Length: 155
Image (cartoon, rainbow, N blue to C red; front, side):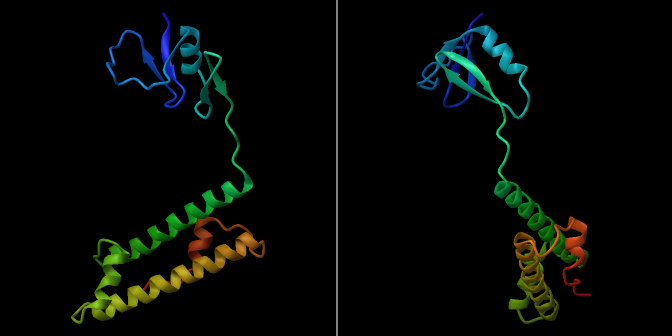
């Protein structure tokens, strides 16, 4: 049984379902074999519509620049988790809440200043290390190696 496919949404819309006015404007009827082939495609392959037929497109490998940005994103997430873990160990929800205490005089002011200072020093060092890595003067560290190069959390 044939089905419908939209190039803009890259989704199938069974003929058996009544979508009313909810179908995309570019929806076209396509053969069932296109639908079955799409179901069997690899997870990283995408779909397109060419001459009324659904075609499977091979995954496009990320560029070197995209891979670097993905890796930097992973490093930044690990650094954020490192900062948050230290703050949580002292009873705060996250590093931002710990550093926020620096703005208020009171029993947690000194600890807040220590966390805010440490957070800034940690990000400063992180950006220095990542710049060195991107420039090729530092071998790509593992996440554990990167975290070991950062300032220690306040006690």
